Length: 187
Image (tube, rainbow, N blue to C red):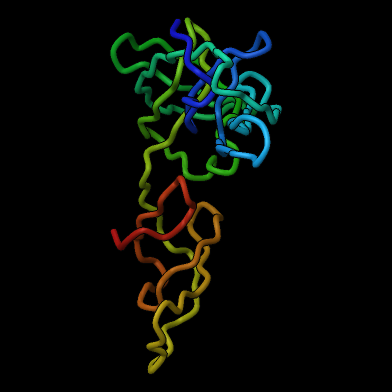
């Protein structure tokens, strides 16, 4: 596995640190007036979800891990476990539903999800960036309300609340960005 300098760490990198696998969530490069520059890195443990703040100087070497990514189809949920199937080998795996966190409601039947593996252990699941949802309830359009950037609250068919533009009505399909959990466009 390649070793990288502490100042080369980027958000999204997976590192082997203190005997565990950690994903870099946030990286701030700090140049104090006195002393050498360093990278302040917020890390999230891929196995148990715990967080850690760590300082890496440019001279520090860290092990960067490459995860294998596979597209797998979501089949169903049972007892808090999500069942996915590999579309090439038809092999099925179960992952805990909390792995998706607040993005869990966007998972739909038959959706293809990218699952990241370290050796043969599944560590992370990434939903498609854009998902189509139906607006379950929202306020009716108010005539004459043309103020720029005036968004209104809406509840989607999966129970998630998002802000939508005034022209979006009830029972309309919209596209939601799963990374920012925000309205993207009309479907």
